[in-house]
Length: 216
Image (tube, rainbow, N blue to C red):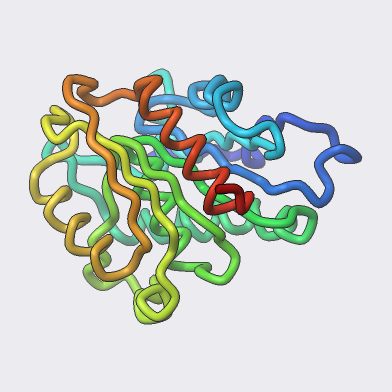
């Protein structure tokens, strides 16, 4: 496992003056990708948001990852916890400058988004998870699932039920977790595989407008 020695790399859609007081949406990319991957989705989402795309801290081939994966697509919960705490270290100062924080994660990025919501429930307004999963905590102590259960997080979960990447055990755990800890909006998109479709982005746009911006 090789960690980046530099400060977190991120790109943001507005300058400091124009973003103060706006809702913040944070893009969390998937395994082997980078901060550029999801930023283009912002053109299909509400213009009221400031969009921040963060690069994961670990090198993974030509891209980056939030935590290492084994050949069985398994993970170390210790490494998950380290990345969650590091991500919050980046976002905590920004939380004082924005009206809300929403997390949008694709694949492994959904694991990070739901994990951060379980770590800092009071700071996160909503989560969008695309083609991903929630982490089974095992002995990870930083998650406060009891607080999340008492105050369920609004979650949009979009996926193809035949996703060829996310393993069945992770889907089964995620189904159980979201049923107990979220205000769930669940949509499935046949034949998109492990990707994002325009129909899905339209549904995400509607979710953000309703849940975060308070529009009908």
